[in-house]
Length: 156
Length: 428
Image (cartoon, rainbow over all chains, first blue to last red; front, top):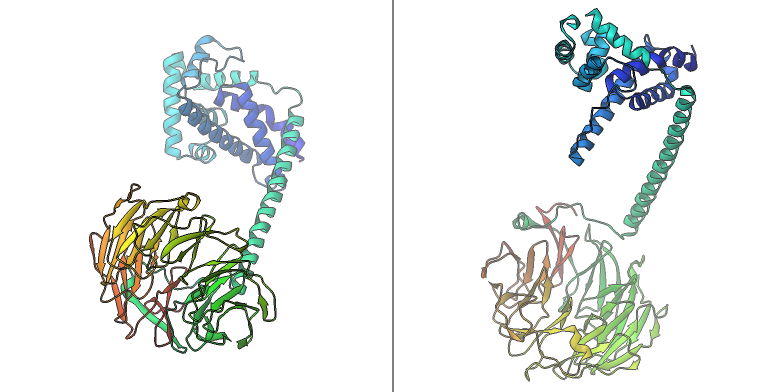
């Protein structure tokens, strides 16, 4: 498979997942591009892996984590945390869903996207996010609880 | 649970990549590759530059330019373990400390020779002969070693001479029979004579033993001059005088007399920063501004009363160290006063006997030799009274030691020994 084919197959799915994690289209696209650039730099190696897709998501989540950490530091430096009120405004959503997703932290959203949407086991998600499996389970539980509170028990 | 997944899927499906996403990835990839190659090039250049510096330094080491001893730095914490590592013998030594340059110890002897020792081993690298005795230390500058012999000539030898016995590169006629010590500064070697002249010779002045003509001469009592702030400071008719370093032919002192209250100068002057220090026969240490050289008359900044001072003071770390005729080593603060007031000492150390030559200050220690044959080290951070932290009995009078990179100490004794000390006698 060529890199271009790989990009065609994976990029929309990855962009959607990253949008759910970041809540911002531009940021999701930036992270996606950086992840694909990293994959392209090592394409000879990546295409021989058992799961090039797994490598792509791991790279994307690493990129997201790095950017998130930097953004948090920058926000602390200027003593003005970035507003989260504009998250998820680029898609058509029920207002209660938008609000519910907005109540989650990016880490909680990353955990729930990987486990609920991508069907990763907590141990696999932990590897992708570079955290412990128990932390993934805790983040997922917190995210579910928060969404259930915001959207009603049927999301539980 | 399925509702949650459905909600997430709903959100995700709404996000579509903008057209040209693949091209944007390729552009970003090319930009990163270009930056990576640029960084690699810069890194390679930096490594090459660092390598070049390393090679240049290594070559300097080979030439002896930045050679450093392997022994530990001598400090107050380990000075008590100083032990001899080698001893060499020459003819009797006059009032001459060793001089270190580029891994070589230069020693002048009353037997008329200048000796060059390998500082690591104590082996004689070469020696140069003069027509009289050399009773004061050599000076090194511009790849030449200068000694003033009692035959009335200043001799310039090549410091890197590679023969066992070396001939002078050039000589300068001073007509002096006392061999006052030469000093060097900015391409000029200055030396006083017993005939009452101060000579300024260019350091580069002929080859193959040519006779060098002085740049200028001026009146002098035959003390060792010192250079500071654009002036040559010397003593004439018992008074401190200053000559402009840019003098030509016959030089007159720019300020004939400094106000020392009618007291006569007894020690060679020393310059530290903007202050020139000089001792008087009746025991005063005078601190005068170097700016005095440009005025008509000038009073001291401060005066320290000590007892008779015979050796020029040493200046280091904000203090002036002087040895007195009654066997004390006294430290005064350099900026004690500016109104001509009396300065109180920072510390006073009792030496076993009279100081033999100017003390040497390095790494928080003051080294001083005494007439009874002892060489002692005192901490610079002494209180009002000061006791030595190290002392060794060399039997006969030692002169001011010289330190090599603060790690090896070399001392000459009146009976013609050259001794190298390191901490615990470690190899240099």
